[in-house]
Image (cartoon, rainbow, N blue to C red; front, side, top):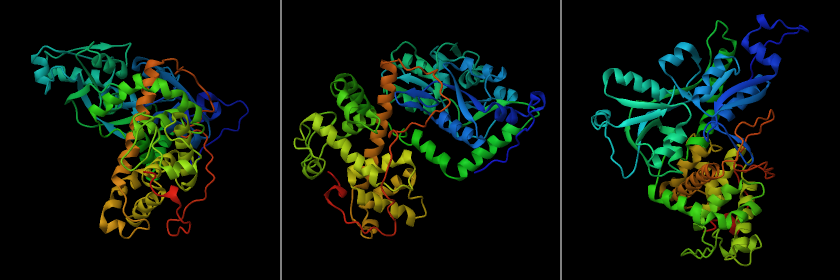
Length: 490
């Protein structure tokens, strides 16, 4: 995708006559306002991440300029920065409201959310707005948010509706307050609830307040549409290329299902078990994010160094005897050796993943291979290609993995029957545990400087600066014979 842009050649350009796009190009920096949270923009130990950040980085790259992120901790400071021309774009997961559309130009929708009333499990649950009103209950929402606007409109029909606003707390703060019983109810969007439930599983949906609403970027309204036109073109091309779907799968693909009991157990283990083994995950993670290795280990053994399956896999990383021998581990019950061996085995899996697969998705294919075997994952890619899907997309391939246990499919594959449905769930569980650990670390160790800025931001992924050296595997031909490690390690 390429954009045709106009550069001014005058030595001293007249900024008054420049378009918004030309000003950005002259400055050499795209300034983007966003919210400092786990979904939009967050600086972890290895650098910045977030859906809005990655989209903004792609857009800045297309414009040929650097990206400057200007994070706000609360919504009240976000749109005024756009009004004051401190930022060029606001990209913060904001949905459309009539007041926003009147003041700003909204870009194309890139996902949809609904507004939901949230309560704490074990307390009274209102089934609809009228029950909430009849009970005399009060809602608390972020001041100036789309939820505030929705309640204002609803109050015209329901004059007894009660709510208050907070200018110092965001969605995450209010959800935490509900979880801890400090607030009775709040209103947030469906994505915020799904993400926060991983850390506060006693949060629950009371009822939907709205239908699905579009989420967009916002820029200032003016007669100059140069920046707006390129933004529309960017999202159109990004969507058509499949990159938008891939990015949304990265951030949303694992949050669709929620297991209350499992999440509660995991949260308890974060307090009781993780501190004991965290140093091992950090020690051996190498090119991987240590939190991903911790999530993998929890999925395998629930951080039990003496874990054993009926098939004979043992230890923190549940290695088979053959896999342990291959990676040089002699004692699978030694946590230190087990974590080392598991990371080494995962690294070898990643090295084999075809280079045609995007770097940030290679890890999901590798984890599936860790569980069900590399050859079976390649079979799932072949099924995906045969059915017209993208064999390099985790979104497409994970939906075909369950077909590996259907005779009408597996009897035509190279490596036959496999419990592909378990491999799919295996990876998605790890992704959820991984995101929960990120949130847990941020909440219990709030020493991240979310305001830090770096013109040379790099996209973070579960693999950090991994240089995969393996050649791409042909989907049509694979003459390499499988050794023991290429079948399921379990």
